[in-house]
Image (cartoon, rainbow over all chains, first blue to last red; front, side):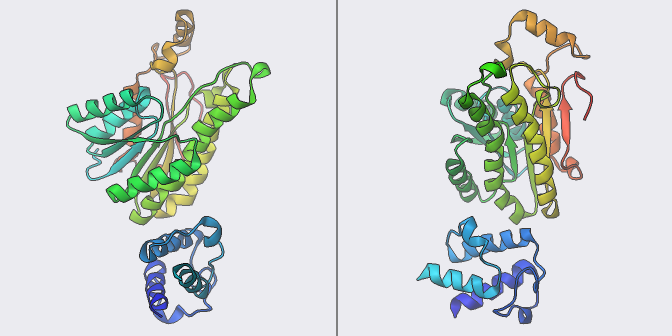
Length: 77
Length: 249
């Protein structure tokens, strides 16, 4: 849960979107209006916040809010 | 033109044009990372030089042709100093020879250092620039990339390649206020050109309307301008510093 709440905060901050829109199924590009550089910056913010390293090939798979939460939860196990 | 509180990295900063760029950026107030690979004594001399004029710098040895080493080194600069605002991709080598005789490693070495090195360093450095919404990447190309030179197919290809790299990077990063430009020196007095025979040097001068070889400081001045706030509306461009020997664009 902690991961989810933190992740939503990061997404709201990075993409300047309303918290209500940041639902698990939301796609960063299609639903939250992110461009490709926004995604790069989001990954960078995740790396910093959760103190993890996200390789480029993993980062490409993170396209929705749920993907991002799952990825961090998995890596922190 | 000030770079107060900014951190800069100059690849191939130990000698020649790189050294002049390091001292110039330090004089503008930047903390300057002096990258080198083979000559620690020369790098230390560059550091001594910029400190003697009241500047601040640090040494950062790594080989820009090694992608993994570059990522690690640039990341550690960013974490040590909290930022990296100006990157000057200056590191370059030559492995001259007529194409008919050129060995594959001579092609690969020049492309790996002169072109791929710029990609690798920029990829690592842009992370900090994106976050700060400010950055300057300056690639040191060459007049050879524009006019060609017999015996330098590898060098010419790499230097022309930097121009294409610059333009595409400029488009990618423009939305975050990061500018990417090239400086293309002509014939400059450095260790690289001092090796040339006297008659070759005379022949070069004959092609230069300003009738002299350039100095490393001439190139550093162009870099300083592109790194400054004054150049904020300039991106994807090549600034030629060649005494007029090539005027196309």
